[in-house]
Image (cartoon, rainbow, N blue to C red):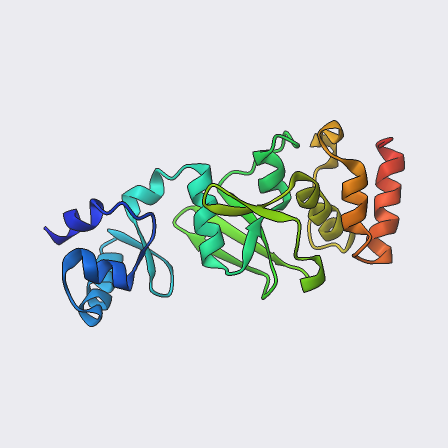
Length: 197
């Protein structure tokens, strides 16, 4: 069966081109097939022309979910509580939510039971991330700086009580925050006093 051929694919995410190659059909036929498989719940549509096998999506590891998050919104990188939890900087755990920073738009995209959240920042603040395995993620200090910035401007809420400040290079955090605004820097000063950082 054609579905079995797709299930055997080693690719995490399948494009229309991939489906066409795997099934030895034209791109037009692949679009029709993808649409049919999506309706029958064999495939999940990640975004236009990008799909993932439903069963595989249910079994994704955290790093693979991060890959999918990067793909849904390009460019973007994993940050905020998702990254802080990944690095064990916070004890806070998010259930079925992956958080990212982007430059184009803020948005939420739900795939099956996973919510992919994107928070837009200015291009000048879009930095401090690197490629780990097959996904882009903020450095711990940048993930924390992103969280402070977003919380200061009332677009996010980080549980600071759950943060292990000893695992952060505080001067690096301060450097990142210097490029934001006075509201964020004032908020950071108050946080430093409150938590004796």
